[in-house]
Image (cartoon, rainbow, N blue to C red; front, side, top):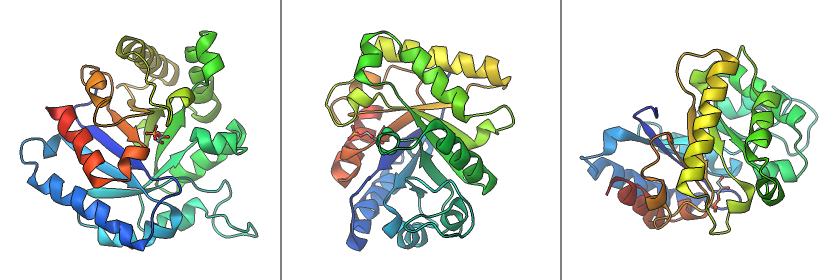
Length: 253
Ligand code: 13P
């Protein structure tokens, strides 16, 4: 059910200075030596906006794909202090953006705003990694699937091209907490959502789904058996080349 290619995506959040490219250099070196598995996965890294231009030039012909972490919901140029439009991101040589991260949602991004960003990003030929996730109370009250379906329906529409969309399921209670969903629960929810999307949007193949939330070299073993997962969105452990490489190594071990 999973597409055979896996994605290991790193989200640096508010981390990194120009010299941090060395972290990506090491990951890139590891990739080139990983003869056995390197054709089985893609690496995408989302540094902060300050580093995107330099990193996208440095890694242009390398294996690491650079993504932005967000973009503004107005396009081109305009009187929006501190904001960066999808058009400006694309012009940096970047082909991916994260959208809808729970940290952005909790800073005030609504579904309506995310929907605008989403269609503008796709219009600018950016591939979108769209983050969804329930909070602790929603999990406790067993509303997880309902919340996730709503987040999907509020933002994605029928005319969007699923070849350019990856969904990242990141339970809010799991981000940075060390807690992860049980593999059976995760498998069940991803399966429900993949089938839901196929039916709702009348697409031929299952959409790609990543899992994010406390993924590290130890927790990764719990996710190995979940064939429905197309990859992982890693926060804290993506800031160290060793930790990130260990995740990939342990996944294929
Ligand atoms: P952690 O891996 O630090 O839990 O963060 C996950 C995340 O928010 C990635 O977008």
